[in-house]
Length: 261
Image 1 (cartoon, rainbow, N blue to C red):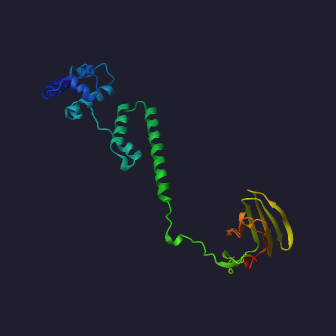
Image 2: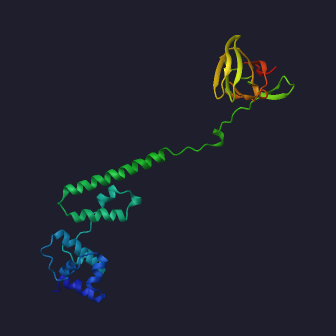
Image 3: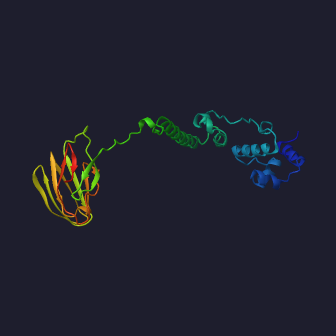
């Protein structure tokens, strides 16, 4: 009766293949291929021997079941539990081959380590996927967009007879207090009263800013109106005058906003 090695050698020769060509395709060492064909793998570990035979059989296009005693296809049940369905294929094949190559009842510690690693890896992936799915990025619809309310303006007449539009505090929402902020682009003398009490009478230096607050009314005068930027309750005011211009008795009230005499 023809041996396993002889049958495989005959198949190789029928396909016109040399051992060197088989070695290059399968990456199995040429000495091992010779040992397989000469049936001299007796001293090899049975697990490795079956592995080499399986590789050689599949390369020649025959079923390993007909050439390897007690051959069984790898059980993919454990790997299927660990690998998501959409990622089965090459990865599942790798896991299966790895488990079989470790042998039945042998190297159990290594098997358990592999199972733990794959379980942890795919468990984290599943958790991350479910979290992203549960918390999608919210898209802002047109109904969710809030627009700032339109600011009413009132005419302000300066000492030179010029008329400018100054934002006025909306009559529907009277603020509880009046807040005034001033920033000096150049030195400017300022006299300011809050509810009738003088709280600032000095030169506001270039690059400096001050903030004041009153319950009912703020009155102030500017010695260099064109170089001071003002904010009333967080709203930017237009420049009230020219550089070097003195403007006195500017008034801010909660009901009427800013008035320039």
